[in-house]
Image (cartoon, rainbow, N blue to C red; front, top):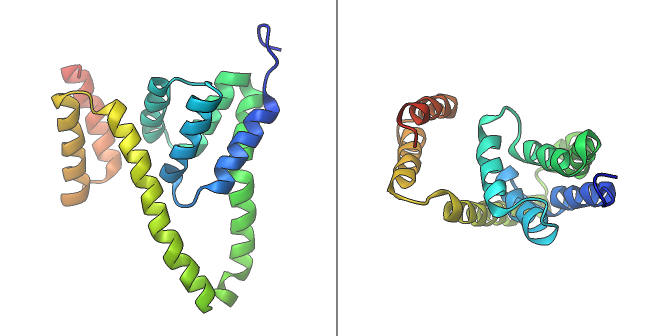
Length: 179
């Protein structure tokens, strides 16, 4: 027990199990479902905390959703919550990838597998786009923040600057100009 309420260990595990099970694509596509549960349904974080956490997870080493699950679990239920949230998130993808690693070379050229991949790829782009739009609403708040976003896009997409250097440069610049 923390305070007067029961710690929701099962809810943390099941919530992140669902996020890991029902999202396709990268960690960014998982953000949509994670936000729905963490912010809108359970109110474990506010939208501002969620947005800040996504930003922090970008600069912390490791997959963005693992960082997010670990943080939410820690905030809600301490170290046990962090472990359960993270295990919930990775359980289904781990099992699926293990099976795929064993069998993919046998089935990769089957038409049904190729058709499935043709459907899944644009779905992943759609989920990622929704996550970006939601983050955009809370992150781009004025001309300065819009300028920062544009600079990052240009540096990484046009000039192919390594994102690590972009993040380090952004942190240094942020301290210098106190954005």
